[in-house]
Length: 322
Image (cartoon, rainbow, N blue to C red; front, side):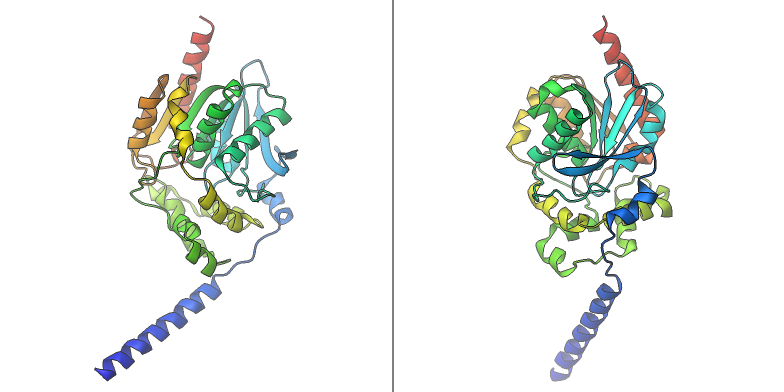
């Protein structure tokens, strides 16, 4: 019995040493934002002073009389996630996208405020800065939460709403990316400070795709490098603590603007039942489900998903002029 206990203790010590070594080998320092700008903020990227932040944004497309579209990304992502949609929309409309506080090149919120109300304030501040009175707001995941929250809190600023696998209801995930798990747990977040193997990022991105084979090395590298932007990892921990579903969701049935809901049937993080709930609670809404896509359908298959967006915009533009 004593030999078994000694052997078990020996194994525990060996495993602890191996784990500690692995963590040390995969510790990566933050990267100053100026070192990332050349690669991730070429033209048409710009930076604006807005809501106390240096917001990284892109303002593209046709600046005509049509209402601009504002695209809001989700947790761990950046404005680059919308590249495919922008390529298809910019010949017809003005399209604006920006990095949220805690993500991309915008980086941490100075007052460490990541409540949903603050995110909505940032959206309105960006609109004000660009002199936009009213916009079509589209968002994925956390960006979807921010989009509908902005519609609830500032209804006069939103003409139409597009929610792509949006969050905001209490979670009931079938599978959560490991990066999200580690960042949202206070103990692991503290123990694994500056720990970020690229393999973990790759696994997290693949987790949100319906077809993980579509996740390229280049895509993983983008997520990886922008996560390393100075302050983003620390801010992400606070985003998980502060940006939580709450009583604001009780106001979702009050949303009256035309709303398009896009969902990936293979979304394991926010399953399609939540799209169905949005569809029930928002009277003037329609739900389109893509059977083979996951949590980021706009990134996984931009052409198919933006085609639905174009139909939605055309239909509502026609109705507006009738």
